[in-house]
Image 1 (spheres, rainbow, N blue to C red):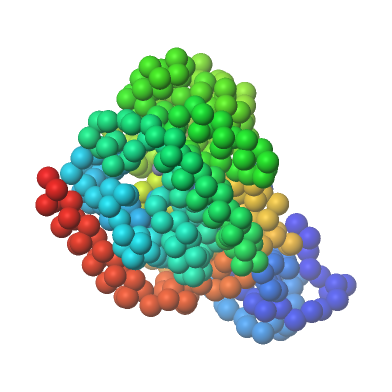
Image 2: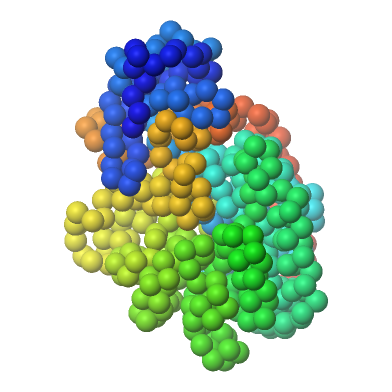
Length: 456
Ligand SMILES: [Zn+2]
């Protein structure tokens, strides 16, 4: 860390945060008590102890004694619109797209998509995510609508060539025209939005899954990713059915398929992986694939991804909520506990600091943003989260990170800063009217559920 001391030329800061405990991993755990954080524009100027910093040289100074400051959480895999099925779909099937009796993406109108995406993005931001990587329908509208709330927003529509209006009925009909259309839409989204709004918006190509994309389409996606040096996100081995379908269609496993088309590598963020074989886990590890680990969502479906074996094989673990909730603090806790269940003990390599690394540092690197976000250091973008530790479930506080991971909640987040801008203050969004977002999302979900029920 570069200390900002008396020999440096004093320059006016936009924001000075004082009195906090800074906790981050880079990649080893770093803790700074009674820290001050200086921010100018979008960047962190210094993170240091109080005696090393200019405390009277900022346009705004906020004393946050009793708060812990972390890098913003990076939720590498989510579908904000799927807030529409929360509280119901968790108890029905492993993923809403494959589950009959719930609203589906092809049924969502543009207005409903925007209303629900803004709800999901708001929830994520209030709970401490500063970056999300989203994929679902109507991305050309939901991407800017989510970014307007204040998040660093990456999004893409679902690329697929299966007819999604039939999948929940158990029919996989591949249609080249659907593939051409969804890929063209994703590429148009990329050329229009990637890197816009000072880099606060990005587009990663997102083929939906190995069973909903043909080998031909996946190869096309791979070619475009190579051309644009782009990150790609997909679902991987999230069900026995997916494994069986790919085996029957292409004569290989989903992981082998991704390798054959050139997608398996360090630019791939693959979600779930619960049904990867041991040989596929080693294949993905050798390729240095990133796993979007979804421990809470997977456990809700009755399955645990072999996260310990994956890490040991060389797969980089990152964390994600997937859908129906957006609390990355809860996800860290689920990842910690489910990892321990796999080995039946507590060990030094699976501790709260390791979960924080997955939720921040690893996520940033998987997203290709490791030199910009994921740690709290001079020169990096000011994406950070302040957690109010003066809550009954967080007192007494001997080890702040231990408290956060074991008993913390997303609602403990008091302030969120993205790109140097305060987007959540005193637990409320600063850019948008939260009540309106909630009302519009409830209205959209009511309409979708009403239509879904009349179709049964
Ligand atoms: Zn997903």
